[in-house]
Amino acid sequence: MKASLGNNAMESSRSLYDYVVYDSTNEKNFATELEKHTDEVEVYVKLPRGFYINTPVGHYNPDWAIAFYEDKVKHIYFVAETKGNMSSMELRDIEKAKKACAKKHFETLSREIEDGAGGKGKVVYDIVDSYEKLWEIVGE
Image (cartoon, rainbow, N blue to C red; front, side, top):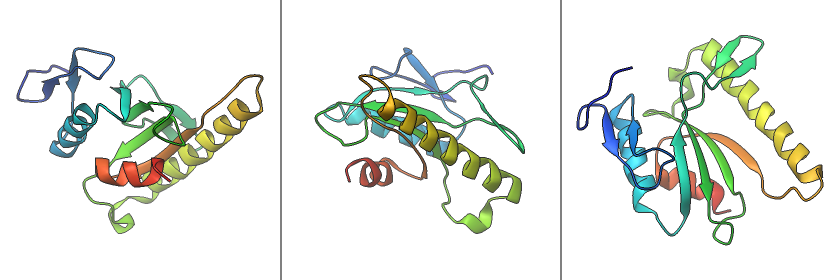
């Protein structure tokens, strides 16, 4: 995907990369909020299309991976899917199935991390429409 600043890319100081390429206005707004919350967000990345989870109904590509400062939140690692409209009525059945599989995938991964020697933190997955919703989930 080609990107240009101001069109579908923005500069970043919190991401793994110098620039974040976004697919929608909602993703741009989400990345802007991640950039602003420097006390909470340690680093984030817009996951590339090549990162996916195999599910029984096809590949699923979450949007973001976010690491929070350990002393600020209960859950340190967060994988998010950003949606402009949170209504489940809007999601196609195949997309709902992929998201349900992703949720199970990351729940299992979290258990493996917690059970492992020296493992700490959780990998949490959810669908959010804003940074505020994300913070409601991780700040619990």
